[in-house]
Image (cartoon, rainbow, N blue to C red):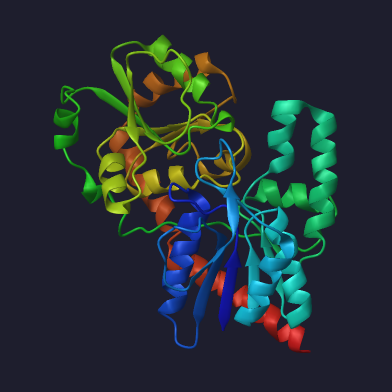
Length: 366
């Protein structure tokens, strides 16, 4: 089986989609009779990557490294030339349509993985009317796919509500060997010039409006100097951050990221647009409890056994939930967080996805 992934959501400082594709590539290459090719927009001078085809493209402004391909037809031709048995499109834009074009020419199934809830994001920025228009677009696009995967039950339900009958719940996974409580390192606090007893929180992800980091900044200001939050990532941070917020640059190396996560006390994610919450799952695999917004994917991932959920965009509720978490047994919460994360180990998750591919391929042949 030759799988071709195509997506715009793949950048040097990429997040969950890049992590998913890299995990899938490694798993497929370990299986007999399987291979993987990635098709992504790239700069002309970008370093070459094995089994990766770059598409001519231009930078997408204010997007943290994402790029826009120069045309639908060249992308479709590239996919046709690769002769894959199955194509997966990982974004809802031009490359999704190119994947559908290529699948039709080749007579192979095409899967859409709905990693982002564009209608909800546009609603937050521009209102309900724009959300409705985007939902109509999602319905038109995703009805064309042979199968549509969504990483949360909430996103699956939204797709089906828009008439996408082939929408199926398919969670993402985590590398439970890399992201592990044993990565905890007491030296991190000393490197940050923090006392051992400091209450250390962490957020990892893009610094983007939909992550609601302004809410977390206000919560940290309410909490005061007894708490410190590490923000790991890239992008534009809110103005006038409180003194108890520390910014660390994006950490692409997974072991290094796992060390920082495991060395903190709890993971905090105020975003209410997450279709899954991979960063939160990686933190749980490191044995951290999670405080998240009671919305979208995080609302499904985080339970009372592993942390707490608070109303979205409510800084005071977030500020109250954090000390309340410390009044509980953090070790017990972390133990349950790790146990929950183990259910999402990449191996079984990817085996299930490839089973879905195989079923589609059999159906197509008949």
